[in-house]
Image (cartoon, rainbow, N blue to C red; front, side, top):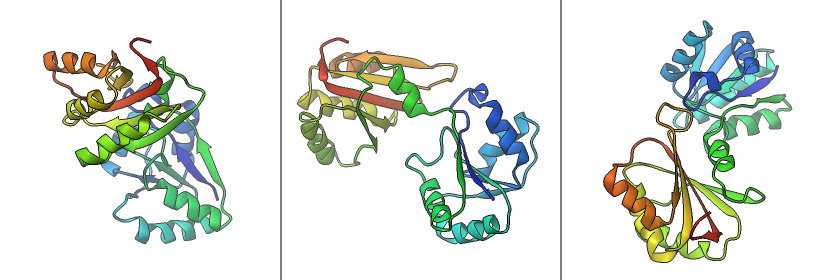
Length: 226
């Protein structure tokens, strides 16, 4: 039976689609990154289903078990804590094994912080690359920004509140005139888009401490102002 890859809300519970709710209500079991988070979503829509944790720390053990149950005609929905599963998370492993076992994988599309930030950024959307999180070491990030000088595509990555100031300082050293767009707390109460040079955004965060989940976007073809 099918393995459904179900997008869930990224902030606002109404981000979810009618189809996603129907699928979650119809499957035999829900695979969740964090069952506590997913239970809140299911409870909101009055859905009661068995859940199994599926994450980086148990994927090697759980994946074969799920494949066998799929072969025995059980239906599963795979969800992440927020957004679309399979984007830089362990969903990839299960999807690959399902395909290798000639099982059907069905996408149930919906919310994505990555794409939501992208389409509202004002940066070129014809070509792009997603870098997930930048390296932990400052020297590696500086090397990354040096390499960006030769990149014509829009580049997107996730960043944390405690590190964003350091990242902007490093970016200012290498790409001082580039336009940076930050999408923060997308679809939540305090959703915000910030646009400007690294120095502009550093000045903003000097007055207002950075908070919340962030998507950062840059394009070396765009400098000064949008």
